[in-house]
Length: 292
Ligand code: GUN
Figure 1 (cartoon, protein in one colour):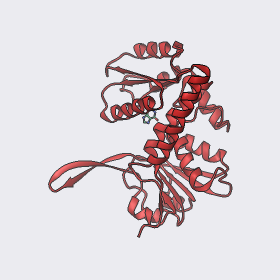
Figure 2 (spheres, helix red, strand yellow):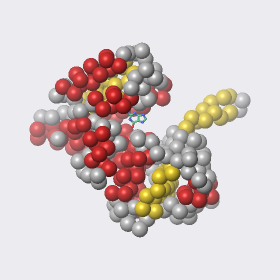
Figure 3 (cartoon, rainbow, N blue to C red):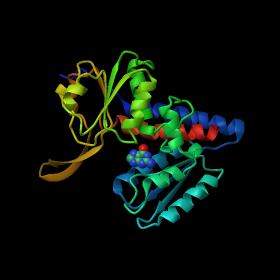
């Protein structure tokens, strides 16, 4: 019997984008400013194409100026950097996002660092990473996925996480590391663990707040979860399923959802949990960039 509260990220994200669209209309009425978001995608990765389409659709729903630059997979580094320079100089564009991963021949670090920090709505520029790490969560552009996770955690527990143990599984620059910085800024006691951690389950069992961002379907089992924990599942894994002889695939998180639901106090589903929040926070960051 599942006892956990199901955290409805889809509804939370819809409420957030609704309020962003109202604030956008007010910004336009008061200052004549329309937030502008430029999304750059290089190559034809199908998952990236879906993400980029969703980002553009949501931007339009918020009333933003939205432009997409789809470049061929073999586009040179120089050409990508020239496009970023143009977008940096374009006053109608307040936020720039380069969808990752990039094709092998492109230097991800060089490309993300070319975006002006004040237009870096992904929060990947070293200036923004530095601000976040220094605890300046107000002025930093915070990466969208961990920022969305924090809102979901706040809804369950509140803004102050003093005395609580938070465990982040995964140490990526996009999720794990900024997630840890945010939890620390909210006074949680934070542990980051990863594939080289000895006895992962022993660590996760101590978590009042457990964030799974490893990219391995169903890796976190029910008995890895502390009773009453808030569980945030960042994983988006496509796993094959057979339905009446028909081969299909479905999205699955990093957490064995049914098992964990019997132990946790609240848990995000996949899909419909963290995913929609990521896009909503991108809109929030773009509005913030336009206001600045
Ligand atoms: N690829 C997966 N997640 C992200 C993200 O948050 N931003 C960008 N730019 N690319 C991604």
